[in-house]
Image (cartoon, rainbow, N blue to C red; front, top):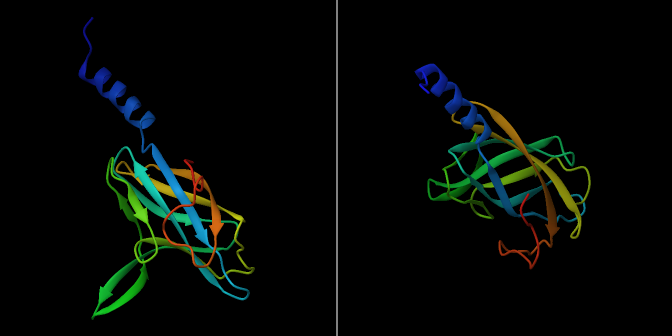
Length: 156
């Protein structure tokens, strides 16, 4: 049986779309807030099978969710929003306090330890196709570190 170049291209294209991103999110968590606090951070580890970008995050908790980075500027550590976070194929990217993270802003209510915050991650492959990943991030105490509690987070 002889396959034409066009037939091979179609098969490869179909396989590539099925194998798109394959993203795993682990150790997701959100830092608790005090009453009247208007912002908090969400943290996690993200790993993609193929080169992918995290282009946005949303949550029913608040209408304002941004991906941020911490960077030194004029000897001062500054936080700023970024348009996308690269997720190199096969490498875990950690969103953590003091580094890349997700900001939940304009909070209308206190985020309490023991709650769970739903997050929708929007990812974009090199081909421009987008997909979403749903995450339920448990809320940890205000003084929580980046170290996961036993059993917290899990794969999503």
